[in-house]
Length: 430
Image (cartoon, rainbow, N blue to C red; front, side):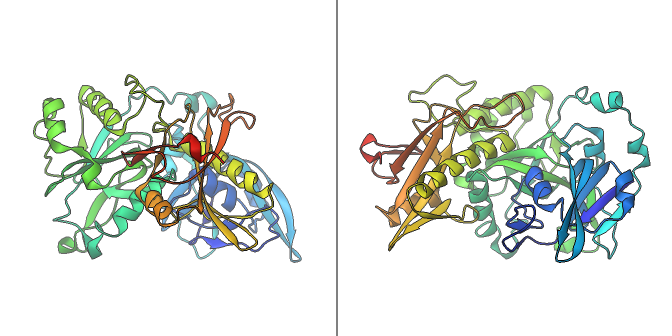
């Protein structure tokens, strides 16, 4: 059996929370680790939970996070006994994770429920260790704005999604796989192909976060029917005009035909997938395996969890820098073209943090960040944490990195389009 915890939309938590949380619930841009950390407590459990080893977090009727339980801790809250689970998030490739993530969740009125996982409970450690035998599959999902653009999604919601991913946060979404009903496992590679009118081409990439599952049809003309979907953790989304053009796909990877599949869910042969990865990396300006292009760039960290940890370390360093100097600092990184606001007396500064494992002479900034800084010249600060090093356990070494603070003036350094690469001018060092 597994214990399932049903999440509702994210909400703030009053100060003094026993687990030190500021919010709980479902946030689409949060990572599995973040969702687990803020939602593993506080719950009312009976002793039955002590016999379980698997926990799931569900939202909107589907399992979103899978964890292995190590124990639970007790917390007395307003005279009531609450519990928080202790455990670790399972990753793609673990058969328990792969079998449960994206699966329908049990529907009960009680937010704490249980469901049968007997076939998974009997798996030995050896069974669960054999997770690397299957070769990763690469699938292309497609979008034609002439066929699907509800409420002007392409002009409104999609640019906001682009901004979320450009800021280093993980965006989890689902997309139709056309007639494909299987063959995709969590951890498989996904590319996002925009079809229809120009500009056409690859505009996104990510990782499958579930197997393919049926749900209500997206096409209003086929209401009442079902369509096939896969959950995707996007690591890159671009505006259509910034995508990898269709013409380049045809010229550099002709083996894939005209790059005009009729339906979503197109699985690429391994050699074609390898060429697409190389072409996509070149388009994004990734520093490896491409030769150097001059000044060291921030690069694009394709592992969203690792990228998030580096960005968080940079943000923590920047906020501490101003707090140590008597400023009141508020973390506002979600949904804004800046990461934090610092205030002291009658002065307000807008803080933007960038982290990188490279030398960091140049960093990636988004269009919205550039626009905000241009509209608030003299009141924006850019903090760059470069040369970040990870420890063997996959965490950022807190003693690593070189931290620099600049006046954030897009026109004071060197700005080139990617989203944008920005090279700060030494005259702007604070």
